[in-house]
Image (cartoon, rainbow, N blue to C red; front, top):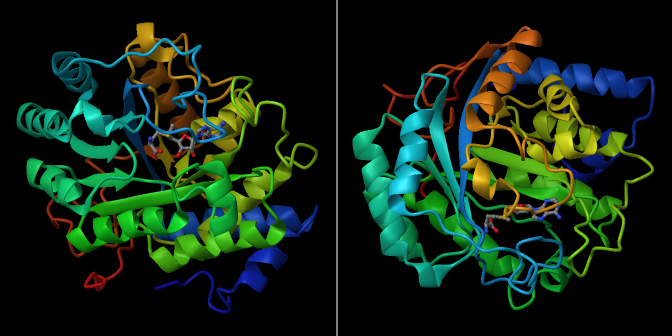
Length: 364
Ligand code: SAM
């Protein structure tokens, strides 16, 4: 199936060699990533509208602006009706997936979220992606029964020691167990990592890419680490601050190693490269765009990192700008939900399979 890259060996060494290319070869890497994206995923860019429905979090991830220990955050949680209203307004034909994201707040009630998923599936034509952190397998199963289609849970770093330092009280093993549970249950599963965390080495970065491939993910979201002033890492720098090309090189190598995964041009690329980061990402391997649909009054309170774009723009403006950016690149806005092109678990009637692979064995 991997027709554009017949001779590649998917090893850490290959990833490291590709990450090390410099001008002018780096342009060849970008062209290769773009060609693989086109051959495997087509020219459609799917738009997933994100609703950041709560910034309450029980965790203390060292990098994250909404960590429990940040007393400066004005905490909020949208009501079920507010979420429904926002989701219904999204279903215009261009955004056929809603991504429900929040901090990790098991106390707020997995059943409440289950009810919201049910209502969205009943009252709108949207596919539902959830991204609310580590949960028990039974909760994932319950949300699937409620209609959840997909789940996003980044592993953040593939290095167990670094993971533990960044996530007090939580291990990489637990995170990977959650990902395994999600895949086992048959939920389209997304993961990914941050680029340039303090303590990350070239070896870890290459291993991050390799782990994405080994996990055989449906979606992979990555983005640069951006220091937030009110966190323990606030005075640190991204280790690639003086070599920001690495953010795009990583994305391109990620695409080379994962031809059939949906890869978003994440918001953090626009934070680092204002006005053009996501466009460049779309030209270097990405095929998904995720505009912010969080009600405007709460945007500034979901402050994961500085310079997050679109904080002051109304949702319809975020969507319009996304559509315009996609078309300006000569690409199409994807129609339908844009489900995974990998999964046996995806109903063929709703799966827009561009160069789809045969069903994969999910019996792990
Ligand atoms: N609580 C859920 C979870 O942990 O998966 C979802 C919300 S979490 C805030 C979403 C993502 O934001 C994280 O997976 C992390 O990669 C990213 N993030 C948080 N702080 C960041 C920072 N300072 N720079 C870049 N990305 C950051």
